Image (cartoon, rainbow, N blue to C red; front, side, top):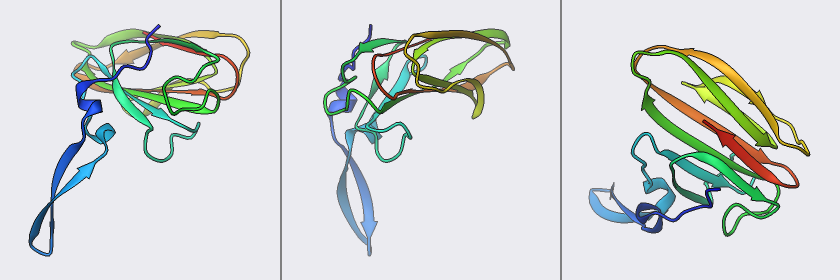
Length: 160
């Protein structure tokens, strides 16, 4: 189980320089906008809704997707039901080839490769659902995005 972790970049506030009418000013931006994670570590964003709308309530880095939050909120300030978590990473798939995308989830999970959905288990379930999708990936760097939602009840998710 990987609880939400605080990282140095997530705990800090970034300063952005902006020009307004020829004047240079410093503007504070939320720490979640400043969070970067070195591949193969995932950038993880927590949303207080199941539509991934608005600004994330928390952003950090996660080395693997293997969480079991049970019936509790996944992080401070989030609801225990009706929340979403999004992981993204751009990584090198070497010379490419066939890859297996095994997932386990209670409730919904979608996996995207370069913006194209490859896994779609998107429903409120009362038990963990498992599925493996085989995907042929061309050589080089590609972006993975994993969207998870919990509508009600226990929440767990695994992707490898």
